[in-house]
Length: 468
Image (cartoon, rainbow, N blue to C red; front, top):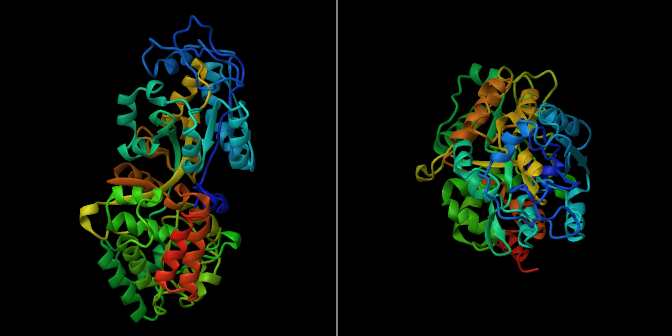
């Protein structure tokens, strides 16, 4: 799926991705005698004003577990509703029982539109869950987001997160770089799904390099089947799955720094680096023998329907590149680790290691009170997401989340992949401005694949989104 952060992410339902929740806070904080308390407890004032603290960063969680903040309230605002809201509330219940802190979560399908209104109006929640870090980035520049470098123990953060997660949490504030949020859940988007039982019976081997994957693609074609099941139709969001492909290939063919420049608009779509990525994708997409239904079917096939031929007996297609949420579209009778499995999309240039494309939720803090600090510190622990991990459909970004919590070998391998990744980068189109990432990028790729635009014209069209 593409975009559990952007529209993509939203669109796809996400059994993974996707994922998202947020907090908003209310009530007054600790008194002025509390060194970690905020001088401001009124949401209508400067939400992130804080006093100088003498307490060590991270001390509030220990105090909370001793009952020192019993009876306080912390509000959360986020995009999860219905079943996802219940899963979130279940994941925080034990913490609430132990600390006496009441985390009042409010979910809204209109979160992305509403959060700006609340922040601009001076009624920001204590904590908000952003499925789109690009949206948080724009708010961070206003100076209304609390810098977490003084709220969280940075040594503990470095031990509990892959450095890439910490790098992605740093954003431009009003007066320089700040740690704008912390990552609590993730979805993995560098996965190639395949029908495991038939794959093994056919004698095929999981490829370890891009060249091996291309050779296997050719072998499957010679055996009479197209290897790839691909669909990018998604209503108004048609085209987003193509962006996942380009993002994955970019991470495998250029530096992480160039990837970052690209999502910021500093490396244009018309650059050799981006064109090379699309060319590599085209070697699969534009070969009618490699794609189920041929190239032109890609545009008219719904992304959720694309994997269906893999579950025919015998399979009519063998591979589908998609985030872990896609399993929600698999037949209900299909069993993970038996009927289907995934392999990591192989590296292309070994000097770029084994990068992983992810999406997920980043929690930001708007009101600085000791109980809010305690909750934010809790959200940096694997324990804060344990029950959700156990229920399936989400991967914890924290290193202290035990692999034993996962209910399938597939999920355990996925979590290990994230922990061991040489580089992690967030879904690029979710980081780009909406007019590009959810606009010209989708349309330009759709036009290119459908044959209504040449590659050069499509890339120019996508790039034009940065100018409008």
